[in-house]
Image 1 (cartoon, helix red, strand yellow):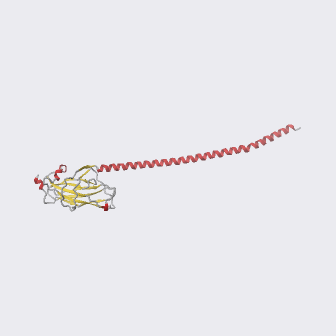
Image 2: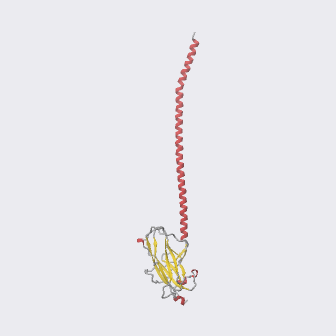
Image 3: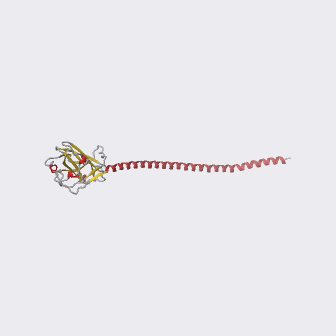
Length: 263
């Protein structure tokens, strides 16, 4: 164990590119960037990624083993923000730890004790800062699927990638299901869109029924007016026709009486 603890001392284990995390910042949208790690040694090297703001970021993967003279990438996703930070600047930092592990170690073999300095184990530490940039004209970066985990890190003023002291209060946050929440939000948006379509259809139906009701009322009023006019015409005809019949009747009666009374 003591031999393993001193392995890697005096040499650079990990080469990191780039030395800062650049995020395209847009309100209510996620943004991602990738970091490239290179194992410069002839040993197996385990790495761990920590951040001062574990609720704001997700890292995939946040631990792993890099074979000798090999490379590995991890992706950092900044969650959608409702407010822009002052002057578009964040004080968030990331810490990348690297340490030599036994030959043949796999990602599944990584344990917290690998990154503990209690036994004099050499832990290489590099700090990266966060930089926000304005959105380009290209499409917005898409989020990464999967549940991720984060770890907070001690915040120190040194941003040059030099070694920093280990913080005993570092707590590990496991399996944050952030993208499951994102999927639920998308499902909710689809349901809201469907509900909006149905509401629009209902409004159109109500409007059409109102128009049809208005037309029916107009036709009823018109029919009532026609009935009133028809009644008036019938009444006038009766009033005009009655005296004429009476005159004709009296004329016939007069002629008949004159014929009978004529000697």
